[in-house]
Length: 409
Length: 156
Image (tube, rainbow over all chains, first blue to last red; front, side, top):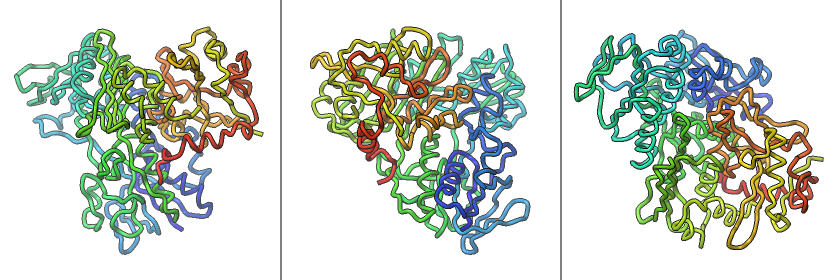
């Protein structure tokens, strides 16, 4: 059996390892287009904070990990998939055959059409190569403008602030992390960042970038030595054109991670898979989804009929010491009830969204202990019974509600 | 024979000696907020519930970690944070559906129960045997895990 995996990120690596566990004899190959050993983009902010060296970003600790598992990690870039011929064509002219193919090509930053965004003083923060540019250009005292304060932008914000740069952040949405939290929590994050010396502009776009800085839509001028963009990512699907593999926002897959083409599967940021909360198919470009996808896709590729329950969209963020998180339908569902604690002076916020007596989504700011139970309650669809009314009156009794309803102990 | 923490909430008096022992063992301070085991109080019923990691077989925290900083202690089976690898990204804290991995803002890393290498301080400190460290077979821990993990495994 020949397994071929395109993409050396968490989804591809998890799939390869799972396939090896299931099949000692198979040929397993990962093709990745970056020069480094498989690494984690999630770790890059900590590299920028000088907390770790590059080696600390590697997905697997030991250099011989993949060789020991007889997983061949090859550098290359796939140009085209010939599904009928069970082959992929590489950019260097070579080709590779497969019996079963996993598309795990991840996603890449999108660049909004702002004049000057291709300039030499502008970089995204996505790859290790980007990180090296930022390490060289964002030194203590440097003036840095960060465009985008979504989830990724806000993580980058923390790293930049820790580098001691003079930081300004511009977010087109009306608040920070607009797709992760509502106005109360988003507003709290903004005030917190401002109190730590970061200039935050929300509800305004960038009209142009030049060698000296950026100009906002209202002509506000922000001088900058370096401009960093974090304006969203999109699935890497371009090479699939003409392959017959169906693509929407990402590669369309069923609950077994199969695409519409025989023996071609997809997982991770590139895949538009089942959303646990909505029952629709969506791209959830987050680390836990990538590894879950990789694991369950591999089960299916090896012949086990493992049906996916869907991914829960969730994020955790640390903005200069203020912790926040979001889970599932944090913005609520039609006809559902909502419990909220808003204590801006204490930097605390907790919002629980219910559908009947089940928790379907949550946001929290300033909650640092046992955060994972929010996932547990949502993903287990735990009926809360009488605890729902108690939580409506006092959402902070969450842990009691969890223990009382799950009987884990 | 693998051993596991067995928790009997009915025997817990809420004295918090387990939390003291844990924080002292792990951080050298008597500070319940640093404890890897927590005792929850049900004020209205006058009940207490010690709660910590069950070291699940297919550990969500371990699978979600982007840098292989959660590894298995071969001797005890515990899922252990490798501080030298942990970058503090906190993905494990939202991935663990039991909420038993927590972020420690002082160290910038996450903390969880590691069974103290096979001699858990909480069990030694518990005066009423509400927390014991016994053969895994005895605790029915597999049944407990199976219950806990049911419908959370990601597959139907």
